[in-house]
Length: 401
Image (cartoon, rainbow, N blue to C red; front, top):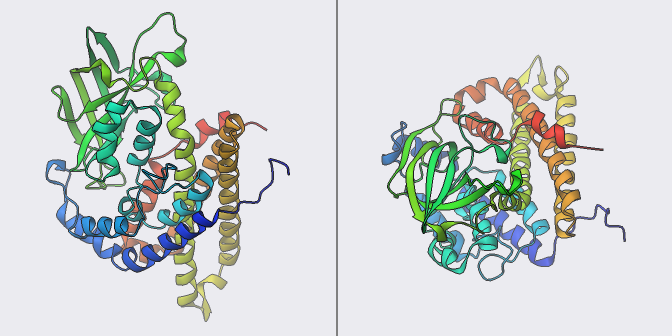
């Protein structure tokens, strides 16, 4: 059988977990989600992140999910996670993408899922015991600090924050922003991408990842940043500075100069997870538009039958299916250990997913303008998912025939 076949059949275990996740979302999450986020906004009305907190239902939902065996679904380890392969987890990621709350409930939310997988793959036993275990238990949260205010951060080798070895310590200086999850009250550890100068190394071996506890002297959380006028509390996307921050040399992940390599390893399955979550969000948007288009009439006809709306719905259906198939194809290449081909497929799927998601959300806004204006937070959530991730023009540079 050709390795290029498009038969994406999940294993029996994957199908069973998919059914359980679907049932849990429909039974426990969807009925309360609108109320959950309303309460969340009431509890966290401004950017004062030090007072942010989750609604009361949050911990109870997570407890129920864990008791149901729906915990750390992204991790392929069958002891620490659910034992799902990338191709098994991809359709589940799509399910969770239909809800902003679901990934948090299953302990599968970004950036923690990527950080946990990073520590699982590259961390020492000491690092795993100290920081991975609490994350897997859902006791703490983590942040991935790479993007910087003064450089084009889509190129990981541009990072200017420094990590200099001084005896048995690492001294970190610099600034990061758009560090997602920085406002979460349970944040405990930051993974910082920093420049470690080495004249003998090429540009892809001059950056390192360093574990920095958030309460270390010199770590200064400066502010939370707004997206579409919203702070995304209590998760948040923050700006943080490092002023002569000192941590032991044992806090290097994988050793000095391994940052770029580890970043690519972290992004491999992460791209697939995120693409599938966005496809789930696009599916939810399509369902909402169709429902409204069939329930409202104008000039004696349902809205869907007016002004080319059927054609737009058809185009959305085609584009969403196209993005899903390409993403699953990338997942298959990852499973077949064809990293170069997986990388190209994932870049294509990321570009296509973002383009169709953006186009569809804008059209949905026009189609449902009165409802969207009344439910502004719903639209903000969808657009934040789009704006905070990826740049189409940067991706196109690397997409080759």
